[in-house]
Length: 308
Ligand code: NAP
Image 1 (spheres, rainbow, N blue to C red):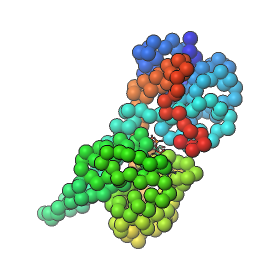
Image 2: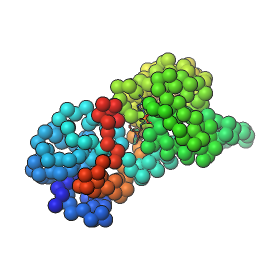
Image 3: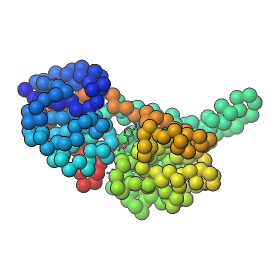
Image 4: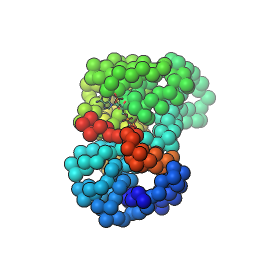
């Protein structure tokens, strides 16, 4: 019997218990799944970083911690965690991010706000075609690449930026610190899909925002600390940045007195771009436990030194 501890907020148990049991059965895994075990008896931990479990030292037999979230910034620096840590790459979450990003890119591309504002007037205007619109995606991992693919299919001129060099069909790829200025210099719409690490902190700051063409738009479903908030507000007020849609923030929920709430050029969404979907995520967790039992390499293992 494989003992799997579900260490997430207890309200999540109702959502995940049945999908996890179904996924374990589908792979023929004999699993005892519970919210409580003696720590020394646990083989795997299904984990959400906001769980009360923060000290992993008593889990001496645990072979891996399987994160329910894509982002790992709240757990990656936990020094009590010495087991492999796997982040969530879930087809349902990815599809949700693709839909959210495509929707918000199309809003800016088609100037849907203008149509809404001119609801009482017959005032025709012609937006450019997607092939005339440059969209840059910062972060070309699981989510950035999926969004790039869909935006390419819609016809956008897509470029991207990552830490390492990439070769993605139809995407003009840049990498490394030197590539940031190049990728931003032509971008009319920028989508942030980077992880929160010391290297990506305030990656959009006064200097990098100035690389963008005047009137660019920012869409951030990545993480709040990617943006220097003061610099973005100043760039919005000066007209350097026309609009921003922000799903993630340094402090969540976004405090009621934060200037983003009332800013006419900012759209705040409450960290809803891409939720982990229990049925598809459970299959990924089961696959990783199956791999662990077979002595195979885990999928989506976090590189602790890189922080993602
Ligand atoms: P991922 O597969 O790990 O991809 C991360 C990408 O960022 C990679 O392309 C990586 O480059 C690049 N990167 C990392 N550090 C960099 C640096 N210093 N300079 C340039 N590029 C850098 O992550 P993912 O699954 O796509 O997820 C991305 C982020 O989305 C997550 O970390 C999370 O914060 C956020 N997210 C948000 C929501 C939401 O609802 N708002 C939901 C899920 C995830 P390499 O390819 O060269 O390694």
